Length: 518
Image (cartoon, rainbow, N blue to C red):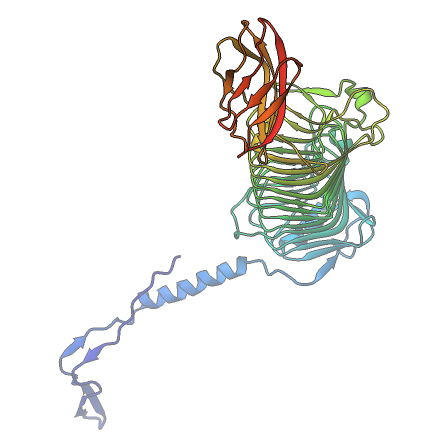
């Protein structure tokens, strides 16, 4: 019964505590109140009003009885009857203690269970490599927590999902922090440390809404995705993924941090899979390594304002000589080259990486790959690229871009300490209709104009004709080099080119020169 608040008021009279005394026949006295005028009636003290108070107290105590009194002590799971040989299912015993607020300590051994976390619970093993949890039901996550769970810890143990390389039909994850349930607080703050997870679908899967997590020394391998992080505001340090069917580490959302993490041999399913894939914004990937992956080592897709710093991308194209001898693979949209760093529709990122091609059994087609013209802009990319490939005849290039000039124009790219330039040549205006520019033009870089173009005379002309205009103005008039030794071309301070001797119809010649722009 819900308690409804009653506003209690005192009874106020004109003459409080005033009585008339009347003597009774038996010698006693009766006092009659003479209070005068009633100023405030007050709240009557009645059984109904008092029962409201009583019922409210009862309801509150019922609610308190339903709150789990979380304990600070650990329960040794062997002492409560759990089998440490991995033969008997321990789920019911363990879940009962978790539901009653107890944290669990697992001594050395193997334990069969599927567990649901509760708030402020710790699951702790005797040590990584000493304690292994295996599922009783391989279609259920070994450990799961939803949004109602907060401030919990899992550490110092191994999880083996018994799903070989994640390729069998079972659906269970190793540890799944799901977005089911009602959100208990803004930052749930899970803490996972010193955990190895193998033979599951996803080693560690974190759904959107699970914020404030600290994940340290998580080793996930022989699964589909090692670390599948779909949320924000979490930190991963010293985590390692290896031999995954798809991605090693996948970051979908924003404001996450990866420090000193490593992804090794991702993409074994030979369909898709990146060592580290970032598909969000304002993430930081610091001092990480991605090595010997079937496809890309690092892929930024729809990723904006991320910082990728001090990372080593060491060898894409794992076993490519056998699986992808042309160093290309097919995905939705067509064939793409095997690249080490791939960027798609991503803007304003800072990327500082060392790229290595040619690690044993790992050969890529290019270092940097951009798929669609104009989809990236304002990225600051600094790459140190080392090609050690001596085992394949396929030429490795530092970059393959759908529009090199446009990419270098829209992004700042430094490769091996050299700033990549936009090499689109501009053409001056033809002011003599009897002259044609057949190729080339000019480009301006850091105040220097470079001219390189081929011309053709359409008609025999006398000397001294101005033929081109619109070039950047030079400090002084200069003569330009000309492939026709009988011809001299000059550039005046108005930015016009003229030739001095006469020229014969259909003569072709090149004009080159360099000058300081005024």
